[in-house]
Image (tube, rainbow, N blue to C red; front, top):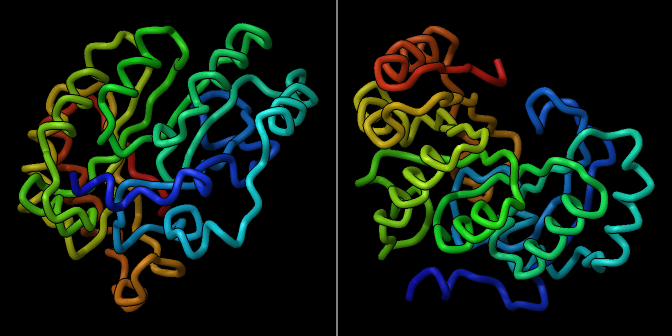
Length: 247
């Protein structure tokens, strides 16, 4: 299937770095942020290409499980949670083991960011009680997903499956959409709202063109605040709460 073709070699997938303390990645908690290298998407507007493209992943050493456990354990008295971002954290086969160790040995809550294209792996960590908060990106309107993710034969049913799983999971969650002018307009925001309809929280994030996977997106100007406010008004018709971030 197409998504397998986008996965980097397994030896390049893993922990590529960490941020010892962050106040913004786990809502309401001081957390350590773990960066997982490897992704099954190639979103042209991605701001972390070094965690996605195989040729860039090769340039960054991979931390071992023991190394990252030692780092987290040293910080366990200073933090109130551990967050995982990428790339796509669920692509890494070692994630459930590390989540279980954080939850069971350290007693710390966990959060993962995901693109929602691996619903079976997402269901596994939720059902096993290994994750406390999920933040899922909704990239674009359904018909624009192949172009927005770089996956021509994308199965949007997987996205919908993850959305429903998250909404009914009983854990804390949010959906997020980056306001990329190429994909997110007043018209398409209605379609995005239909995808997350009824959600407790859906954030709109300002697009940044300082670093993008595709150089073509460096020339795209972010929306002014007036346009972002209109997008918030539209999305508010579909979900319980909308947050505007990055402005």
